[in-house]
Image (cartoon, rainbow, N blue to C red; front, side, top):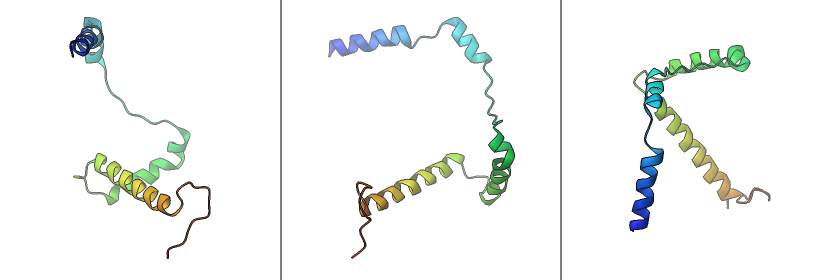
Length: 94
């Protein structure tokens, strides 16, 4: 147990301590999310602006992402039940 504790302390002392310059740069950082891809300008921006009107403003974006994840997991489970290896013909319900 002492060996693990020593390794953990060495890690904290060497890797997790920010220098003064790093802390200053962190304070100066300004986050800016901007998509300038041609696909976004061509069609996706209009799609997202129309889609966002269907969701209430109190709904967090993370909830939408979580629901999408759950839908994908459910779909994967259903597909893997009917065709486990994805190499054979899908079996029918009996």
